[in-house]
Length: 575
Figure 1 (cartoon, rainbow, N blue to C red):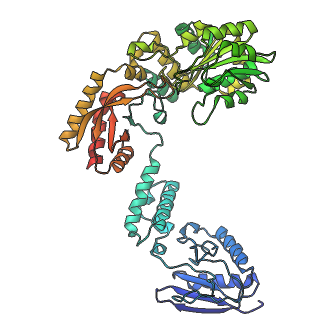
Figure 2 (tube, rainbow, N blue to C red; figure 1 turned 90 degrees about the horizontal axis):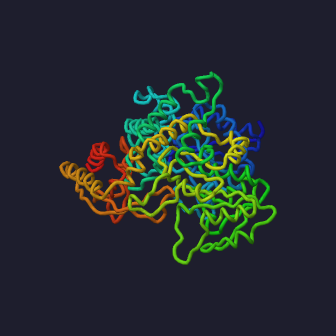
Figure 3 (cartoon, rainbow, N blue to C red; figure 1 turned 90 degrees about the vertical axis):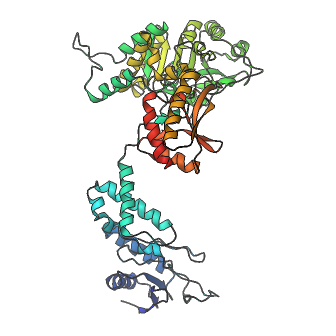
């Protein structure tokens, strides 16, 4: 092999095995020889490798060799090192993990490394990895051999160990003992084995909390969904004839009976319902929409984006705060196909505002031969004023007002599963059902079962069994009774708890601006953020909210049977 290799080594005062390579030739064979030599004789030393008088491309050769060896090494995960930045030098990550030798980028030829403990001066450090306690961490393989991890699924154990070691490498100071590291990894593995979707107690007071899945299903709806998911079901079979049936048939009948619509169609959410309606009726044509209703519907999805995705051109009408029927009349053209009306379900315009009613827009649509599509949003089927709340537009209101199609969500004030409901004209619904996108957006058997069970509760006058309706209807006296019961139990357990007055919201893009009086159990923990985190990470997560230096559990959305769960969770987090 051309050239010479000179190795100089010594033990530094800090215990680092120091290796210096001088007069290293260009040939990759020399570099490979050095790596193999160090691999054979220095596998257990903390090693510093420096190159002096090396060719400018030595670093690239080292990097290429390192990558090649890593691909062949089955013990890649045993690497305990990360390159440390030294005095502004761009460093290359650790050497082949099996050798435990960090490979650092070579500097210019002729520069000698700085001696340990001496100022840099004009000399430039070619490469260094300072010794640290983090380098004494056990290998991945060694940890996986511990009994606490051997019985776990290999992918779970491996991920837990990797994540544990990664966290420990970022910490300063001495690492824990191996047994403690195994315990940490085992705890992480246990958390990885937990389902991502856990049952939780909604103590936020927000009835339709999007983060907690919006509407809580009625017991009968949840049972119907579980039955459909766990068993074969008559989704698309006509039992009388034995031929293929229609999964939408039962839903269509119930929705028409409840709203008076000519027909109905259900898709997977309300945004899909609007998109499908616009794509069917206005693809390649214009859709008129008031500027005051050009809303963002959540998750950064905006109504103009939905209209464009449907292949239509959106035409803004009127002003943000005032839009009149004359604005629609002026905007109509021979290319206009749809008048779109969007209920501002997640905000409220107040003050100097004006907008046409559904009836007035229906007149404009009739004069110009257009379809009126009304996105009601919340899917309300009942009169909310009986709960002392402002009137929320209902599906029936819109249909009676003359809308040709009405769209709504299933998991808002309707209180069912996530779904998009389209109601209205029989001929238009038939066209929607034939649209190829209808197949793309169709609902599954679980949604069909849960929605049917929810609608049957309305049909039989038992809507009070729907949690969403029940929470809206709860009186302050009922909520106060629940709060007092929980607070008393917590006080007996040594928790500083008190009942306080509070406010909550319907949430989920329903009844915008409405605040509901409520009662909450206030917990003044010493470290409130840590306390709230313990409640979230417990065996049964309890989700409240922090305000004014205390953590609050709003009882409007807590069921009586959940109080023992909350009591245990709070007591454990408090201790």
